[in-house]
Length: 332
Ligand code: ATP
Ligand code: LTN
Image 1: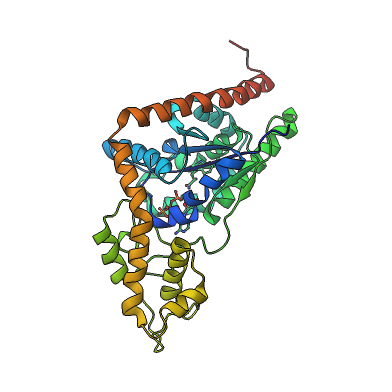
Image 2: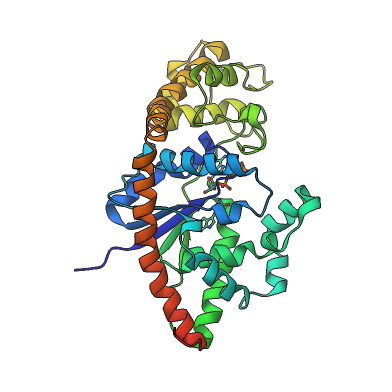
């Protein structure tokens, strides 16, 4: 029998999960657990490249574990874990630091962006982040890594590092491929539809834990377009605000753009915006309620991430042992 293909992905618990993370990433994961051997983790080691408040970091990691499960990741069928629970990440991260070049790290766009944003804290971890991310990936020998467009460069440097290592020591690492979701999975900000929905602009961002009133308020205040036509029509160039909301409405209801245009024909934006808001409220309600229920059940959550760490560690240590041996470290 063929072995199942392996996939792995992680999100940094640097903020609350939002509708963009959900529609662009997490929502696509549950169908994969049927077909692949999947690993999903909270990238907490990465999160401290930017200063965090300790109590808030702890709460966000636990909330993210609960949200992964509430979004449909059945912990019996996939491995959910917290990165810092598996020391092999940091251990292989160090090794890969020594096979990653200063020049290639200097070219990373995320480093350039984040060091411009946090001028007072351009730390070495922020710089070597891609080597740690390569370790996250290579420990599990995955066939592919589902990430958004913004993370593609990091998966590419991971491939370069793996190829360099394999070139010296033989076939140690499987070379993973990035897996970018179809277009349309890029959710734009509600109050600035030319930039992506992001936790750094909360007014235009729907948080998965937002209460229904809050979601409705954000949609009612969403920017529509200054065209004179005032009708609901899909035209991303001329009408970015309306088109973004149509994409959101289509993704949560499964309706086509033609169906949506017909539904709001002659009704204008006044009816459209609250309708999208209500559809989002209904789509997120079960996730929010389930997350709250799970967060109240600390022992269940603990059981999930402990079992996940045990499973992850088993696989990760196998790869780490192989790497140490190839390098020439004396076995303990
Ligand atoms: P920030 O809000 O600070 O820009 P982020 O929300 O992009 O960060 P990440 O941890 O970088 O958070 O992203 C986690 C996953 O969610 C990635 O796979 C990313 O591609 C995806 N993602 C993030 N924002 C969006 C969006 N607006 N639309 C679609 N996918 C998104
Ligand atoms: N860099 C990613 C989070 C991340 C990741 C990974 C994603 C860390 N390690 C390994 C996939 C595979 C982010 O910022 N979204």
